Image (tube, rainbow over the protein chains, first blue to last red):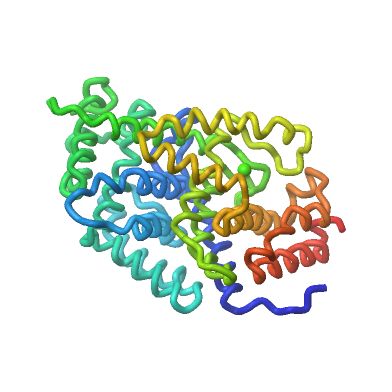
Length: 201
Length: 201
Ligand SMILES: [Ca+2]
């Protein structure tokens, strides 16, 4: 038998790692391409990290820290473990979203050992404030990724939720400010979605 | 109408990003804690990236590049889009696994633009060779993560597949060489799984 005790630090890390497994049980509004089942928050976060790695070069106006963007997107949704997924076009649920998510951040990041607890909480706060270049890029990707999935599933969940092109345009309005070519991409997807009848004007 | 053409580079990146969405349709043998449905490859890859970020400090014998480990684990399973998930204890399917995965890597990384195509392929090759510290840590996490899920789902999928403690021990044998304390953790989980009746000796 292994008599040696694990450090408290490792035990805290493993507790957090097991706790965030719950992100695989939180379903989003958008569908996965092909199977057309709803995507989980964990899958969404993986896809964002992949996109951050490949698309960070499109931020041309300043130097950005790619590892920081990746860390942000890996953790950006974990508060939904307690607070649930608030649909981005649901204004009612949006009202107390901030308070619910702050409490969730306190509990979840509080599971981590010293140093990591503060580092990840600071990254999440930075993401939420959407001011730094890294946070603005993470936010732009967080809006572009579901747009790609909506487009490649024929806009099914846009139609089910009665979304129109102006709402999608408004939701992705900030993208061109941080990554001009991604802003163009967004506009092309919206126009093509309207042309194909996926999205009403 | 947006008349401006997107660069070929961005179009290649988006094509790859849409293609790898298929990782959400590949199901693994291990179960998600709580819901007890099989985990997808995308979810597994997200969980590994989270673990890399938190546990990289347990590699104490040398300096390692955390961003490199995270990139590796984000892409390590995309070859399964073409080659399928080969169950780690299935020796028959393991025989032509390498050839199937090499062909998949050629096709998938070939979708990316110059520079990124070579960078990601080199990372995947490095992961497969399991020689560098980053590859050895990525590999250790790729084995530890399902162990945590098996343990927290009562060993259900171990039992369904007739796995015993020695097989799990053998599968995680290399962990202590790259991260001694994670090696201890592995042994404690195996012993506790045997004690609780999740895993036969
Ligand atoms: Ca695998």
